[in-house]
Image (cartoon, rainbow, N blue to C red; front, side, top):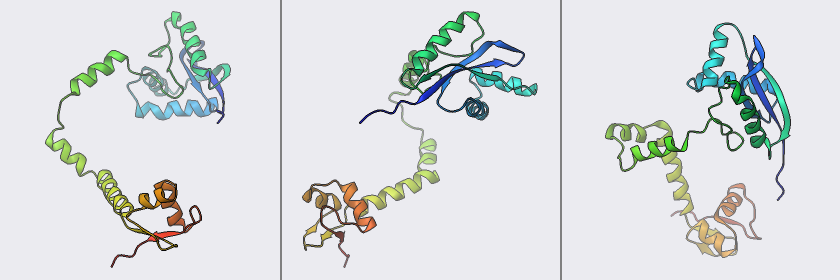
Length: 206
């Protein structure tokens, strides 16, 4: 299967009072206007990032960053070209980028390896505090998730009958008998389709 290569832009953000010196270099596959609005939305979500602190400071003065394209490229080369431009402007001393590139499209500001290792080591072998575990278990999203999983597992283990009279202990067992996977057969049963020339249904409980 061929990989679709999309157009990408390497862009810069600069202070509207000094547009010639970039403060941040990034990459995007969307329009520059849309990318700028994306930065605005992240100011509150990720306020500790240097670039977002800078944008917040500008906004407090009723100013907005200027965004402009440095280069048009494609998604295969975007990360390399972003690194090139970050290193090109880094000597100016004005860039707020925390690294020389994201490593891959969409992963901005990765933590240094030593920080990740230190965080992992600090948590290794530790058990979740009882009150935190209770909060986690009783969170509505987790309760709903466990209910859905229980219902899914219960359905998977229900006996299944084929239109040729054969019965099977579960969807997976029936799927294996006809050379298909459980997910495909489950969807066919839900939609009322035939699967490999057979029609299956759940065996009614007595």
